[in-house]
Length: 95
Image (cartoon, rainbow, N blue to C red):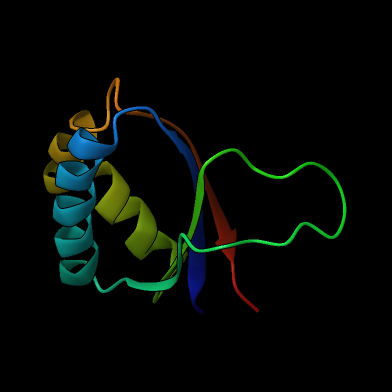
């Protein structure tokens, strides 16, 4: 069953974030993930808007997300985001 990673981030340093974003995209593809939503304009229908960008990734399984996120490659890439963005990352099973 497909699973989804929801990522919301407030970007603090756009130039350095671009480096993180490019490397993260490569690792996501190698892990079998794909972008469903990658930033873009939002319209809030209820509640408060999220700060910054919203990204939704689809992976074949929840385990595939966990393996990618906790794996050596992305763990190193994630360090590029330190001090560059404040993020919230959530994993949700699909239906």
